[in-house]
Length: 335
Image 1: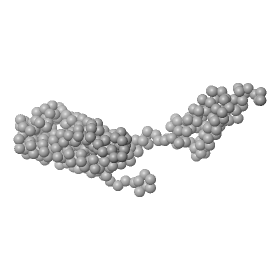
Image 2: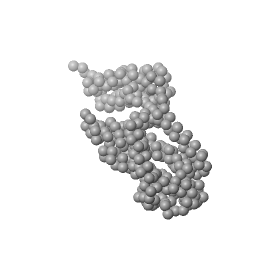
Image 3: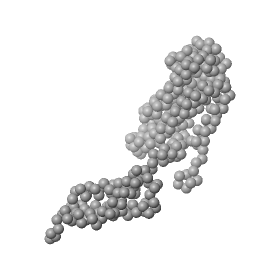
């Protein structure tokens, strides 16, 4: 029977190995402070070796019942090294870059079927509302809330409507009208996504309603000979804003369809799986709404020529289309 006390055994055990532990601890401190890039090749290669050595020491310490303080120290150090060796070391900047470079456009491209359905529903709502308002102007009030119209309704004169487009009715009036429209579209986008789980029905109705609101506005102005002008006024920011609503609707439809028709999966598993792609797309929708807000707040106020507004709208549309649907390199083979 050994006459060496547990305390002496623990001290001897520590002395024989503490140089390696100290080195591993220094490397982990350096890496966790955001200096992974400053580690030399030799240090990076040394970490797995030191990690395995520390794990072995931890196993011995537990098996021989060395002091609890030493065991806790080795457990903590091993956990830190584990995340360095096997965990993701992506920085916040890497994750943000990856989102815009890969995750978001891939998610949107994967929703192309739902995007077509979402856009079709919105277009259908716009066409039906435009036809109804053209036949009977009183239908306008059924599609456009009074607080959004803010006096821009069938009772307004043509000059009042024209002033809305060129800003001659005053900056405040124009801003209120534009802000109301933006807020409406943003709310529809969020609700279209959030209510998608209800078998797609609320999402589809919201898309129809949002399209009807736009169609009613366009029909009213077109009936006064202002169709060209209202198109430029809407589309300078509407390309981005309405596309964001379409994508939000597509994300909601993806979840709703998975819940309604889960296939061999459970409904919960289907919703979770589809929700991953939908959530990434929806995170990007928030970015698009922010960009649309900038275009609405600055671009439309500063760019007053209708042809210039259409030019900005066209360029914006091409940029979004190329970003989402253009060819991109594979992260695996670099093609």
